[in-house]
Structure formats: structure tokens, C-alpha cells
Image 1 (spheres, rainbow, N blue to C red):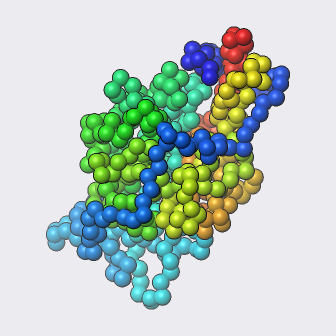
Image 2: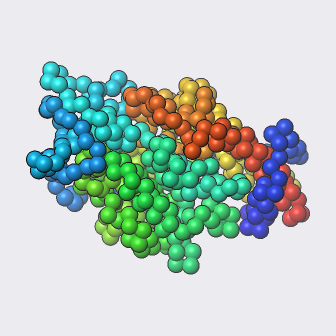
Length: 460
């Protein structure tokens, strides 16, 4: 493995000079790429996947209509599917109900045979009124891979825009690699020497500030526990959760594990005030910490860190899970962040050198494309919908603000899966930032390749 100092040299080279996209890097030897990270890489004594033969009930679902007040109001005309919050006669009524049913094959609410009129809702849940009476598990959302890693001129970054901007643009799942260093949780990529985005607590505080300004939104956070094999568990994260103020928003499920059809609607979660769902990939313990859910008893993932541009929809984690169980009970993440596997041995001549994965940012606009064409997000979403008889729950992407036919393409894909129309402006403070991201990413990619060659030559 390359020493941390050499990785820093790679990044310094990018910070000093961004190469023009016409520059070429010539390498001797063969750069080998694997189709994906092998499932065996996620098994062994260090990996613990919880299994369950049944469920335990934590609490009983309420059948009465939730009450309370919200900042946005809408009128209700009744209907059997209506849900509303009623207060005293001097206060307004807030309707959080969905719209019309969507087409077959997409997320949505099945059509009803009743002729009674559905309530008309003007208050959007996660940007769409139609989502208010849909189950949390029945909506496709965009996930920003390594959300906090938007460090300027650092090639280890996975995003260009900040977490606040990601949420403003419509990202509703945040995800990130974390490290336990000096009794503190940090948001770091591979190593805190490579990319350090600050404490995880500060990241949570940013989310809390956004939640306070956006009361009709449900946000998901997936913790990547990078030090799980060394014994770091969910209890190492609770201090940051409490200190950040996010604890008050964390949803605790009724069942452990909670199957896909047992989740509440967004409207129910919003009205209860529990509108942040937090998952952890390894070493979660819902008995000890019930508000951090074990990822792999609630969802599965397609191949992680894919280098295969076909983006297979096969189940990779949790290993050993049956197709029948996944189809019936689990949500799922479609990993669509393309990587390039670099065979360092082909450069150095050292056959024992490890291969490394780097983000394939040179084609990020194609990777995030909305069309149903080879290698594009639109194609993966459609393919996975066919393979699993339902769309992905989360679409994980790098540089979400870049795509084809233009900025916002990843949200177009999610909207199609949800049977709604995407008509928001994306992305960032102005469209020019998104337009500039693709060539910037390509320059960073070429510069990283050049810096890597330079760095490994120094080791010979």
C-alpha cells in the first residue's frame, strides 16, 4: 500500500496545477481493472452481519391520526385516505396526504376503486406532495456518496458542493466514511491524512441547522464505520449524536428489524418529529442504541465501489442473503459511483504491490446521465427495477450535481422511479458551478494519474 506521505504528494500535485483535459498520461505496463470488489472482501472474522429469524416489537403502531401543527398549511376535502393534523379552532389544519396514484413499475400508491375524492395536499414532503402518504421504504432518493468530502483541490473528494447545498438541491440520503481518532469521530476518506473533513459532530450540526429550517423533510444518514474491525462500535458515536442536537430527530423503528412494508409514511414521520433515519454498516446494536439502525438487516447493496460500467444490480452485501428474503423484506442501495482500479505493480514493476481504486471522474457526466443508455444512472435504475420488481430505495452517486443532459440528471432518474416530474433548479447557488464541475473533475482525474505515477516512481 502506498504510504500516506505519497498520497499527500499526489493531492499536492493537483492543488498546485490542474492539467488541461487534453493532456495525456502515458503508462508502461497494463492497468488491470476488476469487474467489481469481490464479495469475499466483505467476509471474514472482522465482518459481522446480523441475522434474524424473527422480529421483536419495540412499540405498537398508533392507529389514530397524529396531531400537531406545522409551518405550512393545506386544506383537506376528506376522503378515506386523508391524514391531517387538527389543532384548536383558532389554528389552521395541516394536511399531509399524497396525490394521485403513479404508473405501474414505479414507486407509488396503488390506485383505489373508491370514487371518493382524495384530499389535495399542497405541502410537499421531501419536495413532493405525492410523497406524504407513501411509506419511507417506497420512495427512491438520491444519496450523495461521502457527502462531507467536498474539499476543494483534493482528489479524494467525492462531491463538489457542501452538505447544506446537497440537501437544498434534493439529496435526501447522506453517507460517509468515519474514523475513530483520539477518542473522536472524524469524517475522513481512507485516512485522515488523505482527506479530513472535520469532526462528525460538526457534520451532524450542519444537518440539524438545515432540519430546523426545513420542517417537512425526512433525511437518511448512513454511517460507514471504518474502524469496526478494531472494535469501534455504535457506542463510540453516541456522544457526537447527543452533543450535535440530532438525537431529538432520530427515528426508532417499531420492529427490529423493520421489514420493508412496515415503515411509516413520510407524513407520519414528519408529524411525529422523528424525521432522521440513521443506519450503521457494521457494529450497530439496536438493543443498546435503538436509534442507530443496523444497515444490512434493513437493506442490501449492489456491488460496492464498482469498476464495471454495466453496474450490475446483483446483491453483494449482506453476503449469504437469499433473493427471496431481499425481495420480500429489504430496501436497497444501487451503488453507481464508478471507480478505476489501478494496478500499481504495472507501474512499479513490483508484482506484490496492491491495486488501488480511484474515482473515475473523467466520465462523471455520463455516469450520472439520466438516459437509459449503457453506463448511465438511468439505465441502472431501470435495470434494477426489472431485476428486483421495484426501483432502488437509494441511488448512490459521486458529484451528484454533474450529469447528462444537464445538472439535475440524478434527480430526474429518481423522479422517474417515483412516478413524479422533476422540475426543480439544480444545482448549487448557480447553474454555472455545476456546468464547470465536469471539466474540473476530469482535470483532477488526469492530475491524479500523473501525480500517482510520479509518487510511485519515487519509491523505486
